Image (cartoon, rainbow, N blue to C red; front, side, top):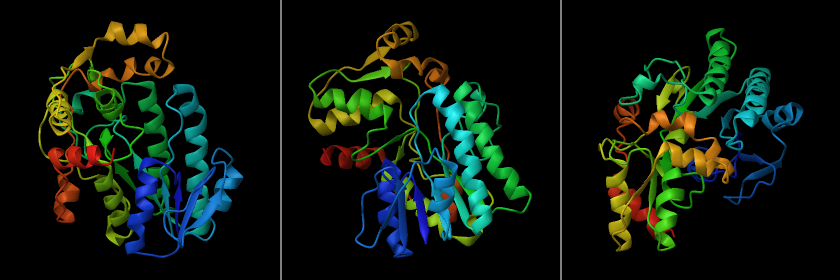
Length: 306
């Protein structure tokens, strides 16, 4: 049994398709899980309840932790440590391997221009400190020999039917409405984006590769060094329009946060936009002979999906 915690999310729904290459026993766990494959087992659960987490993991060989809590600091500080503790403890109890889908928030800000799996851990944000806490909680149990697990990290992402992509929310969706695309702080810095179908395929590969465990991996991401403006330009071209990018400054971001709650959470993360942001996935690409989807092809598929 391979179990996906947070199965209804952007990555979870695609991962369930990818896992059919390895097993026909897939358990989908979320508040209201929906089948992707005919043979999927649905397991409704509130993953903020440790007892329900344990029940969801019982009988699993591999557990994929893909939960996405509301993008609010207080929610993260409260719920993430509890969920990771419950997940790790249940995996240890039932001898399940753990695959944790993580982001890059725990890296030192000076590593952002070229991130690798060996980049220094020194989060400059409060959200990053939460990510550091839960990653270290997991890795400590691995070092203690109690848990077999791996961390799969992604850059900011984009892809078909994606409701969690800042790029799509600010640029693509505006273009669909006939409005100008937007970006934050500086659109002329290099900014890597992981294509979600590539990420899902890679997570499935990692979870089913014995020697991939007990380490961290960067999920496959295009090696192209394009700026945010250039990538938004690909959306413009694919959609047959030529809308100028409007760049939101820090003071505009803070002002907008008064009226738009999600934007209140953004200022502490803007160190990721005021410098180049390059995500190096060469470790994965070389180990698995994987060629990440180009931005041109990724944008084309994203637009085609509507």
